Image (cartoon, rainbow, N blue to C red; front, side, top):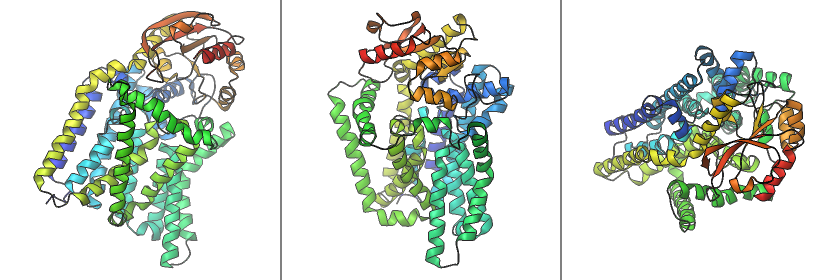
Length: 530
């Protein structure tokens, strides 16, 4: 029979070797710019620019003009001391990769403890490892330089705390306070984790109601006191400085659900995500429907198997049931209220990845608990092969991910030829801004102040240009569309990229000079031509 002991040497050795190899690959074995091209998300470099600006200007700003709270504070606060000691932009990025690797490996150690407490089989543990740490988006998630690796570590810390505390986290005031405090730290790592507190409180109230152990008021107050210590100062800062409790990025991304927003993620999955898969793997168009069938079939089969073992799962997952409920509720709310991020922004789904890994790991153990150890060894080899294949596929992936190379090329041009005192406007400006060390006004409105966000939301770019003195625009434009566009084209990148939809023609990034009277007409003409 397959071992139930977590310290099965094959599991430990295999997973540690894979995880360490991933970290060494990203941190030491290639140049920083190559690591950036491979794994970094554009939004991640907002954090690094804000950290640099905080050291230089003494307040949180992305563009050097307006104060912003468009970031999750814990990751930002961790970066600021390093930004002080490492002034070179590439050195600071290297530190970002080192921190991500440390969080990644630390999360793995807590993962071992969680799987041991939940009594996953060795094969189930390995399956959970592949889903959480070794999936096909692992490099572009845990090493994206977003807060994802830190968040994963904190989630597993909370799971270990929950399992170790047992029922004391509903009865003992100190333990309840500790649970609230830890959830507050998780909230600072990513604000949408506030839902975890409500899931925990719901179980706390349910516990006292079922056990009839007296009023739940005092335990509830202990939890509130714990979460308030890290959270209240942050909320007060937001309200005093910006007049709102929420961040500018959450204000900008929030949508009231409608039929259009509900179906939008499904449409983007079929018409954009599948095309990205075909582009990366060089598959012909006829595979579009086959990929859809494979994805839907895999999800259906997985849910069917999980449903068949639901009773055993409910017993095994009881110690972490609040986290499992949180992962489900979080997914629904992201889908409903942040529909344009629901599929492409994988960093939104860290709780779902962690929860799915544990659920699938338990399920695999239930299904294959009576098979011989030889079968498990075959599975280890198959999983390791999947990770090795990712390393092998790396040059092809980087060769197709030309958008990052394109942005770095534009950044180098801006750094040489555009005055550093002149703000530049761009939609996704994180990478170009950081590598050019140039002030940018983000046209997505995510990391300025609420006035910038309002003007971007209203598409009043003329007033935005006038108010903030913007005379330059960086935007992707297909070469055949350039004729007749307002403004003066100053530079076009030699590298081109399929910016959004993988079936469109490659576009260069182009630098234009234009004033506030030209920008609205420019964007309107460009939109109509597309």
